[in-house]
Length: 125
Image (cartoon, rainbow, N blue to C red; front, side, top):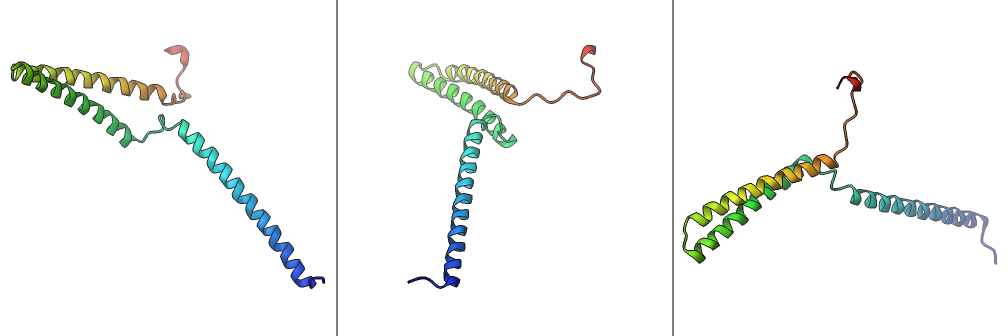
């Protein structure tokens, strides 16, 4: 028994549309996968200004807190109150400054070099 011509044409169009939709979905999945892989490798250089500021501030505060905590523990153990705390606070502050300069140097190295402006001659430098 053969299907009527009207229904037979509709099923061919439906299967063609289904194949087209499946190929578009597969293409979108491939594009999404490639974009995810590409963005995962470049996240460190593409931080926003807020993220950079939060990272720098967190590293600075963490170094101070760790140094102060060690100083407090030294004071408790040796009974040298407040000198251990003060000295280790300063050591933590110095470590925080070093962390900030290290992070900023890494971020500057990871950022792309701006193009040379047309009006500046390289031989004049």
